Image 1 (cartoon, one colour):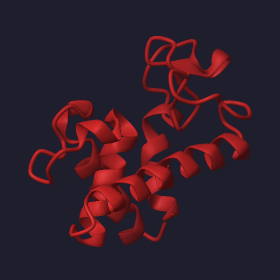
Image 2 (image 1 turned 135 degrees about the vertical axis):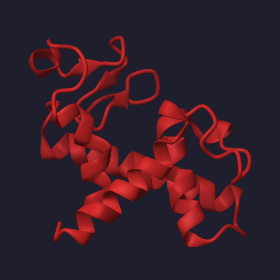
Image 3 (image 1 turned 90 degrees about the vertical axis):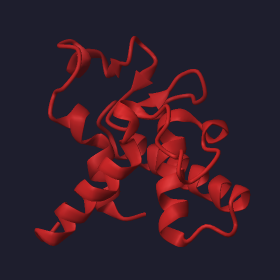
Amino acid sequence: MDPAVICRISLPVSLGQGPQDFRKSGWSDKGNGFGLMQANKQYHVSEGEWDSEEHISQGTEILTGFIEQIQEKFPCWSDEQQLKGGIAAYNCGVEHVQTYDGLETGTTEDDYADDVVARAQCFKKHGF
């Protein structure tokens, strides 16, 4: 997985956006999201401390699992479309990804995957 994508996914949390007590507890999203990668406790048992390598590895595995599910669900999509579909699924679930044109419906700000990819590309452009 491209580190720039992982960096972008964890960026809002690492910049301290969200509840003030996040850095103490590691929990946000009304107590559902844990750590830099915001692993949802409704679907995953969190691993490691909120800012640990173990937690980042777990989040990366969850993301790659979603990408693989999107690849199976939409085998005719291009690699870029499957990546964006997997990123959208990471945010809102595979079941919500129905079409490429409607990919962002239900994601954060209805542009989560586009935002992650665009910012990751920007990081790469500037030497990340």
